[in-house]
Image (tube, rainbow over all chains, first blue to last red; front, side, top):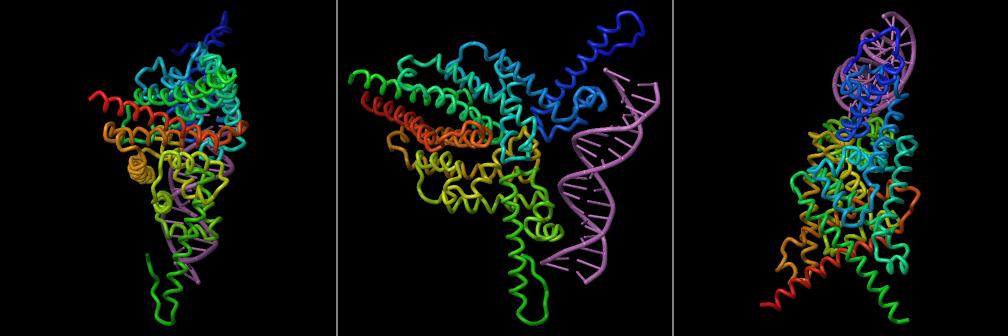
Amino acid sequence: MKQGTRQDGDTRGTRQARSDRSREQILGAALDLAVVHGYQGTTMAAVSTASGLPIGSVYWHFKNKEQLFVALLEHCYEVWKEVHSGPEGLRRKLSRGIAGLSGADPEQYTKEEALLKAAAVWALSRQLGGLAEDSEVRAAYLRMRAEMFRADVRRITESLPADVTRRFPEVATKLTVMSLALTDGFYVHANSEVHLDLDFGEYADLAAQALEGLVAGFARRAAEEEQQR
Amino acid sequence: MKQGTRQDGDTRGTRQARSDRSREQILGAALDLAVVHGYQGTTMAAVSTASGLPIGSVYWHFKNKEQLFVALLEHCYEVWKEVHSGPEGLRRKLSRGIAGLSGADPEQYTKEEALLKAAAVWALSRQLGGLAEDSEVRAAYLRMRAEMFRADVRRITESLPADVTRRFPEVATKLTVMSLALTDGFYVHANSEVHLDLDFGEYADLAAQALEGLVAGFARRAAEEEQQR
DNA sequence: GTCTATACAGAGATAGAC
DNA sequence: GTCTATCTCTGTATAGAC
């Protein structure tokens, strides 16, 4: 969709639109590449080629590689917030996070969400192969991760029985940590265990069973204490 | 095991010993660096400096960076096999894998084991920031991971009630996958969630509870079916 | 076997014409 | 705003003296 230059009239809006489109093209190309190749594996040259724009344009829109990735993460986080705006219990969360890994349903598991999962791995602090300890990308990601975590805790809290959350206020946090660990763990598994291909739907169910078992345990204890009074 | 030629004196054993020591120094330096900096983050120059040997010596002992890391993984795998030779149930496995992450007890969680965990992340196939798809290091790691997985399944099987494994033979595999996912997930968590520092001992216990709950569920079903006959 | 110097490639980033 | 040419730095790997 390129566009001829014009010298007079209403070029302002057009130029602005062209610039915006270029920016989006660059971000889109970066997203595609980063999901596949990671942070270090995504070169600015490759972004330039994939976007169809020369390297100079990439650096015109983004100060450097770090800023490009910060912008990319922000874009992905915006998408995440839209997608995860509704209520979401443990089972649904695990289903999305684990079963979605098969990549069967792109509606359920967007490229943007895949990138955020991948970023979790880049951010491994003792793993500078990804992001440097003091990287702005890392800082941006950790901020987002913290926010996503809090949002998850809120939604998990809402999905739990009232007596459980009353008696054990910390249980929602614990369950969120567990479900996050499980989805991250299966992400690693999904991408490294080439031979053994798992039925992720089945494991999502198993994981949900396991966590629901924990909830049931807490509920039982809450009920018992209630009786003793 | 290469060997210098010599014509006199008892330098033979000495030279051999020196060569072996150099090799070990290089591997040791690579281990220290790789655990912290990852595959790409560990440069041959850094290995050279840390080992105290010049870059030429590093390349004399190892053909290239890939072969160095293959050798390193093999070393770590040997250590793993020694450490994990005894029986190991679900709870113990999770305790080692999750509680060990705090790094409190180096006896329980060796540098070698930490490297194998880190390698799981490097091997992410869609994450070439770590290892290339066709990397020999990646192939070596996946082979080891498969072997470790099978060993885990054997030990988990031994730790389960006999009636459960008889009725549901696949349950040991499922539990092994779940525990692997949990340990990998907590590894990611441990290294990225800087603000929220978790009590990993507590979460190891919670994870064990969750999986034991699953076992109990299978046991109940096995018992019920037994009765109905 | 050990070491120094260096070749070579790839990646991030900039200059400056258009 | 867009593009080409190029600089610089870093990292892998090799050549060859000792």
